[in-house]
Image (cartoon, rainbow, N blue to C red; front, side, top):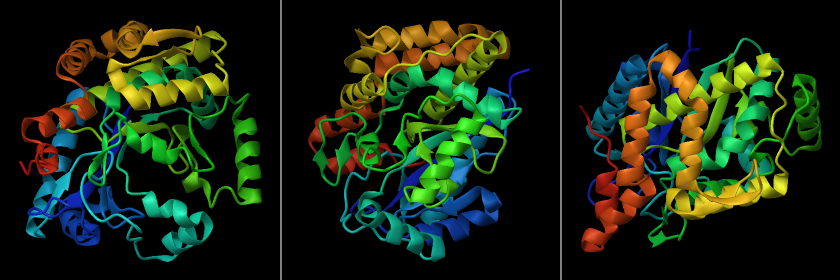
Length: 362
């Protein structure tokens, strides 16, 4: 049986008239908690509201939870006189310095990370997949590493930042690159190796706590899962569900490889970093590098390789047709970043881009 999985998403709170981000997330979260309880929360920056699904055992249930979660969040925002937009970066608004939320932990973050917090106005999607133990989560992480640039290209949804086109499909990942513990995870020999490195990072002050381990794959600090956290928030619920299904299947294939004793690929950090940047710059339309071979390869072709790699797991879970249709839709209609730029080209207005990303309230 396929493992249970779930999604965490972040959304920007925007003014319905100007479409600029506004620091009203605490009010939206308070109101949404009536419907979602502890599944909704604030984030470091008061422009952002977060919601999460419960663990789900099949794709249909996850899809229903994501749709109802988004509708509840949108309804709460409307009741507060604002809207929510699903973009990886803020499209319009006065962003500097970012309005940091109240509370001791956020104050500590300000003291530790300083100006890095000023540009932490970013919205991502985290996918959790259940794991039997921490050792398995770490070993699965090793097998996921070569596929991370392809997932990044598929999920790109952040070309604009504060009124300008960055020239990148995923600018959000560029802002992460400055943090001390972020980006693709290192290769770990074991969970003990993982804990040793984390302990060193905590001891030297590069980590505030285990919640600030921002590698794009990590064993969750609070849940029995491996957490894949490299994606921009998806513009639509259907895109989010397809991404989650792809990730769960990739985790299943990776876990089977661990069982079989297959050695994980170990691309060089330099090559993986370059592949990340190429994926973030050009998205699916670009030519990157296949870190498994070291050769140039288009990200569309790499998406096909990813589908071939996970097809047995998708077939076994019954998700194959839904994911094939979803990836086909992305390849034909474009990623979120491509759709954002298409919305802008129609009239040359960034407000149209925001409108295309607003969460529906039903």
